[in-house]
Length: 326
Image (cartoon, rainbow, N blue to C red):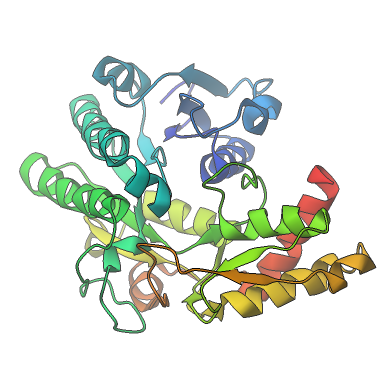
């Protein structure tokens, strides 16, 4: 604890998911420490929090064990979001992806163990399901990874399990399914599809779907992810810890359907967007064809009740992008 407040370290706290977690827990009067090296996160995401007395920023890299040890001092919980995301990035640069996502993850586990934090909740990934064709995806049935990124996220789960069994560190992994929402970066070579398409449509540029657009995803709004992190952090159900959960809504949308809805919702603000053509390009290496999560385990053990469907979340996200990035 710090200043008689429950203390949470959020690694990658200046990123998309991390900054939303920072904001949520600051407003619930926790003491929040953000650790970020700003390689993919942005200072502007956390600038509003710097005035909070219960917020602290540590600029540093999880690849440095001493930085990790400093960051976890007096922490009750760790929410580990820091990672190099993106399947294409990992294919282009597997070494750096491994250094951050595996070596950095192990540094954080060791630091959390040594500091005796109560629980370590970490961002896992739906990419772990790999070439498994089973739908919906169920936690205990995975395939072989299809990218270096997927390998790193699976290794995270293996390390977390070993640290739980060997050292008694409580861990919970959250397999995120295509998270989207406010503050998700639309720029850069590895931008996620929804913010990237939003920005292109707002500029009246044609977005390009990889493949025929029939691939489907369980797009998951950020507020559902925040709920899962809080439930994982605070659960007192012994059966609910030292395991992994799908973090999703439990429905799937094709890329073609997603693009049509984006055009529809953005056209409310700019009618010209309805006339922008959506194009198709080659399929992307390492992509999973279909992604749909079973969320029954999270419902049963964590009492997870996702509040936002894809449709509801997309309307919120589009509104945020129009108001903040136009």
